[in-house]
Structure formats: structure tokens, C-alpha cells
Length: 236
Image (cartoon, rainbow, N blue to C red; front, side, top):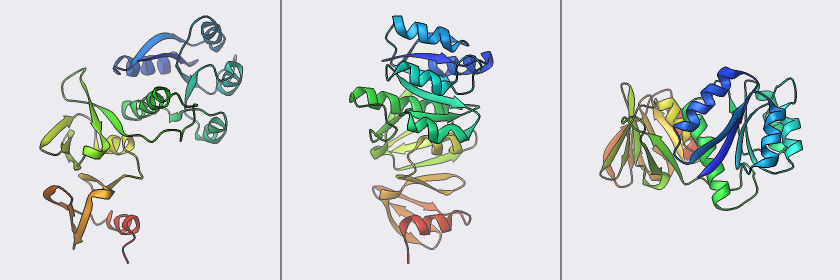
């Protein structure tokens, strides 16, 4: 369980992040505020593992806040301005989330922080290889841990996705685009409007169909995705 705090000068942004935190079973909200100075005072009196932090705030910028903490906590930056990403990573932030922050992107960053703290490594964005994610299922309030190694393929089905792992199928209300954002791009590839597959499990391609290890199902390759599939697999 990670203790966390939300700091943003815009109340609606705070409310959204607080909502995301409360949906995440391994996060415990200690404090939320629109005042970064108040947040610094809170850090001086209570141990907090993770801070979700805005960048542009009138009293104290997010980057100034990070400098003031001197590594006292891990930080995930949340802002509408992508130009701050590089400078943020120079300050060893765990992740950088662009507003409006979707739950899929939020939990991916939170999971990265959990991995970092569980191995007691410094807060660097590349410090730990991700091995799993938590998926919000069709049952309200329920999240299921999915190991990347177990995923055979992901299929978009109308208003939800189906994640196939061996003989099991997990249904989630996430969209396929959100699901792709949660998966490591080095390990998974979207091959069709309705399918995501693990690169390492692709065993053959015949025409516009591909086969997967441990799965009898043939997956179609969409015409708009074929060039990327060829490039990823370095097919000559």
C-alpha cells in the first residue's frame, strides 16, 4: 500500500485525481490540496510515498516543489503541457501524465511507482521493468491483476475489451486505445482495430493473418497496421 497526496491549484483536477486514487486498491490518500505550500508543510510532518503533482501553480511550481522535497517522496507530474516532460525526468519523476488524465494512464503510472517502492530503488522512470497491471473489470469497484506474460491477446468487443490469458477471459470496460496505453509498447503491438497481441508470442504470419504461441486462434492484421507489424518484426 502506498500513501499518496494530490497537489494541483485547480480543484477540478484535484477531484479527478482523488477519484482515480480511490478506485486504486494499492493507494491510500493521505491529503489533497490546491496549495503547494500547504503540501510541503504536510510532507514535513507525515511520511508520504507518492505525490501526484501539477507543474504550473502560482505560489510554487511543481519543479520548485520537487527541489524543495529533496527526494523525500516519489513524484508523478500531471500537466497539460508536454514540454515540461524532459525537465521533469531530469528531476527523477516516476512518470509524466498529460491532462485530462485517464484512469488507464493513471494506474499505469501508479503501478510504476508501486514497482519502484516495492524494490526500494530510487525514483527513476526506468528503474524497474513492469511485469503486470491492474485492470478495472465490468464489476464495479473490482480490479484484477494481469501478468503481461500471461496475456495471449486482447480483443475489442463493442464497449469493452476481452483479455485472454490461457483458458481465462477477463472483461473490462476499458477501450482498446486505453488498454494499449497501459501495456508496455516494447512488448505489445496493435495489429487490428480490434486486436492487441504480445510481440514475443507471434509465431507465424500468412497473408493478413497471424498465429500466436499457445493459442489456436488466428488474428487478423488490419491494412493500416500491417506496415508497423512488418517493421516491428523486421520482416524482410
